[in-house]
Image (cartoon, rainbow, N blue to C red; front, side):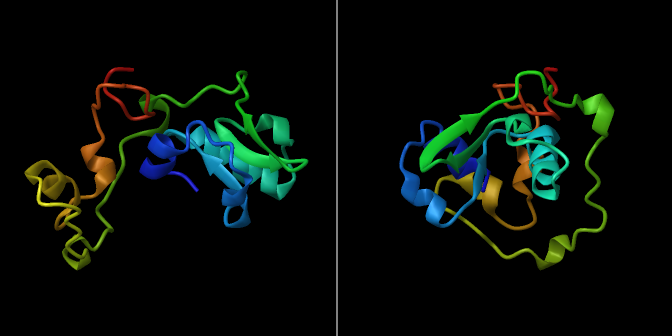
Length: 129
């Protein structure tokens, strides 16, 4: 699991019950946490190699953040290409009446596109890096 809910609501996760539904919860953006998780599942990395990832170890919620593993910079991964997306097929997903939320979620917008240049500047694709 990952994404907005995990990033805002699960940063101080301690309740083991969430792991009845998920094996791992990755925080924040970037290829490194997901890449390390895939390699761990494939058996080519150890659990200590995970980055910004919650999991259950010996019945306890454990946060693993391999400090040696760095995030990729935008220049290393390139710009996302949405040319194969069927943008006209997206359903309208207005979350609330707030006009800003309408811009983020309604029609053809992909939330990843709207995240470019956020004030945190910690995402792989952030313009502040």
